Image (tube, rainbow, N blue to C red; front, side, top):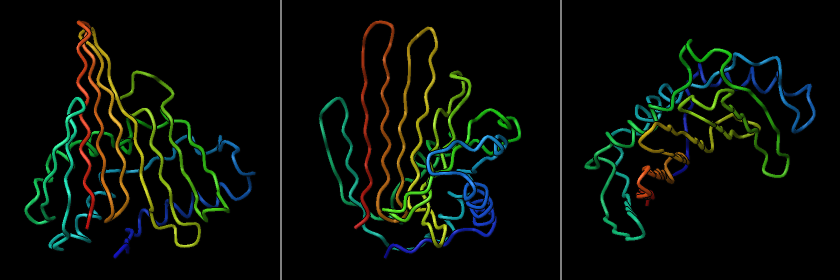
Length: 192
């Protein structure tokens, strides 16, 4: 089942974004929405409340430096803490992020979706890019893609997150140290 119930607050925000983007041609940046933000935490909490207790089967695939292992589990027994932590750390809805992201809204008539894109103005921000794809008619979120990362004198850590409601979750992490060591971790959760 691929039904997603969106919170009223998120629906209102998406509708406002849709209205703001309707007067612009496809692909044109929305300069007026510089204070527009999306709450990954609020959306995640809503998803949890909607689907908690549902016994979805899940195939968890872990690939570390090219070696893959997998296990079949379920949504009730799975340890959700690392998944929630990875996504919630990328939340950009706090007031401290006001004006820190460029916002664009695009309509794709072929896929009947609206895409809302938030791109960091400052490369030092942890969340670099947040892309929300919503159904054109219902504004239900169809997918979320996030790029995050940080660098310090010891190395870099880049993160890519992808979520399709009740279908798939992907967390990809790449760490590079100054000594040249690379660690590449990809954890994919595919709902059965």
